[in-house]
Image (cartoon, rainbow over all chains, first blue to last red; front, side, top):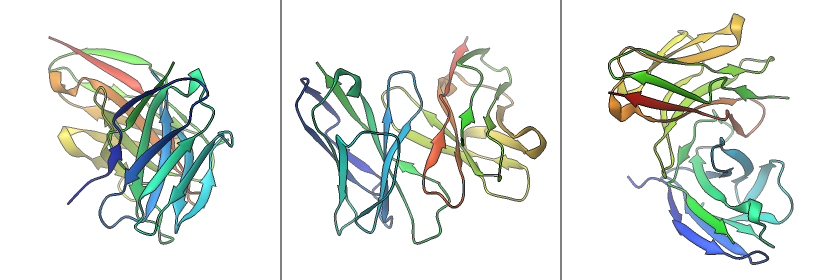
Length: 115
Length: 113
């Protein structure tokens, strides 16, 4: 049973560039949430996708956008990168269908460094 | 606002000693509660969860947590710590009616020989 997979695992970008991170949810899951974890901090909620729609969004600017595909996989896009966007980006999947419990299954994360 | 507080940024315990990590959630309806563990450079792994019922819940790796409504707390405990328990621990809460799980800032556990 495949867990949550994320790619790439590490990447380095320069300020102003754009980045796309990818996530495949755990088998049987239909909901994907993205979190940003800065060094020494807890994960901060970016947004959640369910049925290919953004269902809820955290306190992040519009530079952060996402997408969910019919196979439930998801992408996180960040435009006009800032130094402060350097962080571990975590994808988490869950089973929605109106029975949310908040229990999340996490991938290993994508470590983004902005220079 | 809904929030989760972990008062201790880091804790050091001796191997074999007992452990308690503190967690408080904000007032209001009782959320579903979780503890996750994160090893360096890795994702988060669920240790245990509380939805309702028995206020003492058992998890993996010998961890347990106790829910206390009167104190809005959900503290994590382990009777005897092993060196492999050194990691970052996150308490999290999910308030029904919403969609996001809220995390605390984490407590880093150091284990000394």
